[in-house]
Amino acid sequence: MEQHGEREPEEFTLVATKPYFNLPTACPLCLPLFIYLKLANFPFRLSSNSIFPDSDQIPYVESGTYVAYNNENGGVIENLKRDGIVDLDSEFQSVPDWVAMKAMISSWLADAMMYELWVGSDGKSAYKIYYSDLSWPIGKVLFLKQVYSVKQRLGITKDNAEQREDEIYKRAKIAYGALSTRLGDQNFLFDDRPSSLDATLLGHVLVTLHALPETSVLRSELLEHGNVVRYAEKHKMELIESGSSSSGPQFHSVPSSSTPKRGPSNWSSKPKSKPKREKTEEEKTFKRRAKYFLAAQLLAVLLFLSLMGGNDSGDMELDDEDEGIAFD
Image (cartoon, rainbow, N blue to C red; front, top):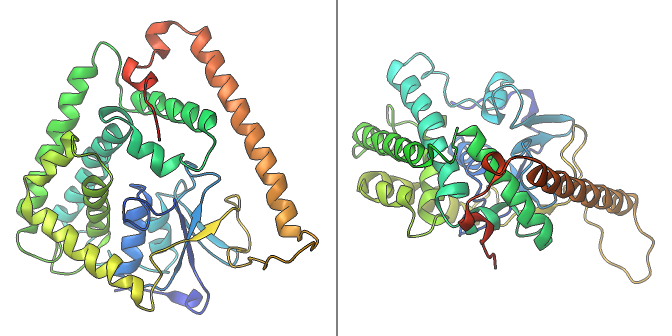
């Protein structure tokens, strides 16, 4: 089922957003990868990146000089399969129903989650997941930038906003119904064996149930399918809650301050504090990176504000409710 290949003796680290909402990571891209590795019984450490939480490279898996980024070659799971590290899908790739279900989850449900987090809800969940460790002005503007980016990606304008919302929720409802029928009372979607399809669906369902507000339309649609909810909560207990006391990765994450990059891992190097000690090279590097990060984010804020001021209000205008969001 899983293939650890030649790298099995090495330690692998999954870099994701920090734990939130009683989940090891509440990012809709990171949680499925965490679950995928757990379903494969693949040993790894969990590390959080608080400096670049919305980087398109995150999540990623690294071991020594090896790294598999989210934004390269089809994503982390595809990279891990291609490199012979861990593959749960080798026997499902040519099954038509499996391929169709995977396409539906990765498009219709992914769009619905994106819409719900950034546009359809009050935005507090997305802010907590990605920006709560940043200073308020930077976090707020980055959030608004992402809202604008999501609207562009989903093709949402002032003129078609209601129509697109109806389409997104309608497709999500169809997807939930089809997946509920496919699942039935089984433990997994196909052949009673786990695959990346289960990991992707479980991640989506758990974020929907635990991270989205009770007023969420997507959450309400999901709750109509009790077997899918039970399936997700059962695996949450087995893979996340029970797993936290096993030999697998701990529920809490190891904070990471490193910039995503190729090269040897330094997640485990955490020098003990001593009075009046000299700063290590790692600390000096981190301090420089923090300065660069703040400068880059301030520049992004200024560019975004200049764009908002220089474009027609019809193109760049954010909804009043977006502008009035107050984050704790």
